Image (cartoon, rainbow, N blue to C red; front, top):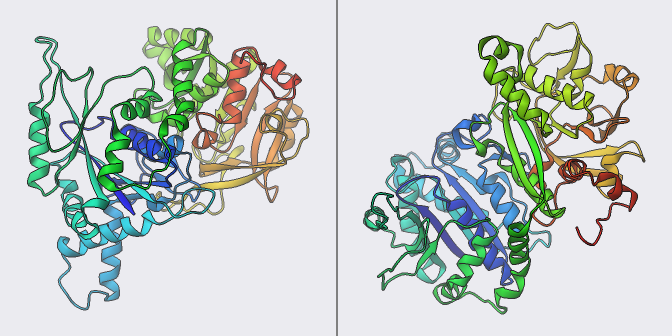
Length: 544
C-alpha cells in the first residue's frame, strides 16, 4: 500500500481537496486502484449537526455517513463509493479510545495522546485504506489522505505526530507528503512572496515531516530553488477539470512513479483525454442557462457544493454554460417586504428571470421557498425541489410537524424512527430504493425507464400519505415510493413543463460524465430541450 498525505499551510481553504482529488485521478488514470481518506481535526463525531456556514454542505454517503464535502470531490473525481469510515475526526478517534479504556483494553495503563491516540489514528488509516471503493471489489493500491486545517493548528497536532511515526513504520518508499501552500502576490508590488510558504514548510519539518511541495498560486512562479523536493505550481484555472491536467503536465505522475515505485504500466495521457475534452468544451461554451437557487444558506457557495456540481454536470452535457443566481428564501417573504422593501423587490426580480430550485431545513426561510415554488408552478417555470416541503405548498391550511408539532393539518410529518431527543445521526440517511409506480413518469424516463433507483437520503420528515388523494385532485402524482409503499419519494405535476419534487438528494451521486437525471431534466427544461429529448427516446441530438 502506498500512502500520500496532503497537508496545508498559510491559510485554510487553499484547495487541498481538489489537489488530493486530482492526484488520485492521475494515479487512477494510470490503472491503479485508489482510495481517499479525509481527516477533520474537530471534536464532532461527524459533520451531521453542522450548519452549512461552518464547513459548507454535509455530504451523505451510501452507508448514511454524514461527512465533509471533500469526500464529495473524491467521489466525483475518482468515480468511487466511499463509506463513513473514510472520514476520520478527532471525535471518532477519541471516542474509540475512550470506549476501549472503559472496556479495560489497556489493562489499567494511563491512556495518553502518545501512544494511544496516535496509534488509533494509524490503525484507522491502515484498516480503511484496504477497503475497496470500486465496483470490482479490488483492494486499493494507493491511499490519498487529506489532513484538514493548517499546519500549526493545535487541533491537528496528534495527527501530525501520528503520521511522523507512520512514515517510519511503512518505510519511505511507501509514504509521501504533499504540502499545499499559498504564494501570495500583493497588488502593491506585483511580486510573488514565498516567505509564508517557507515558514509553513519549516514548521512542518520541525514537527517531523519533510514535505514534497505544491504551491497554490494565482499565477506561475517566476522561479524556484528546491533541490530536495518537486515544486508544482497550481495557478488559478478556468475549470477544476484542468487541475489533473496541470499536475500531469508538470511531471507529477513520473515523480510518484520514481518516489513510490508505483507499478504503472500505461501513460496517463490517453486516460486523461476525457478530462481534457471536458475542460476544453467547458471553456468553449457560449449558450447560457440560468438557474435560481432558493435556499437558506446562500451567503456561502460551499453550502450547496454538490447541487452546483450536479447543475454544472448537466449544463455541460447539453453544451450550455451554467449561470446560478443565489436567492435567500427569507428575502422573498412578506416580512422582508415590510422591513426592507428594496431587498424584497430585488429578490423577486432576480427570481422572475430564472428557473427555480429550492433546498433547506428548518423554519427560517420556509415561507419564501413555498412562495418561490408556488410562483414556478403558476408561471410554468421549470422547478426541482428537495426534501418533503415541496408537496405541502398547495393546500392553504397545510403545515408541518417540523414547524408546529401541534398542527391539525400535518401534511409533512416526522418519521416514527426519528429520535427527537438526539440530533446527530438520527435522520433517514444513506442509499434507499425508490420504486416507480407510473410508466409515464418523466422522472422514470430520465432515469432510463428503469423500475427503481437507489438514491441517497437525508431527512427527518416525510409527506403524510393519508393526504395523498388531496394532491392527486390538484394534478399532482406521486410517481415514486419506497419499497413498502409507505413513503412518498417523487412527485410530479401534470400539464407543467417540468415540476418535480424528490425526497432524496440526487446531487450526491452526480458525476461529470454521468449527470444526475433530476438535475439533467431541470437543465433540459430550462434550455427548452426536454420535449425533444423525451420524444427521441431520451437521446441527445448529435450537436449536443
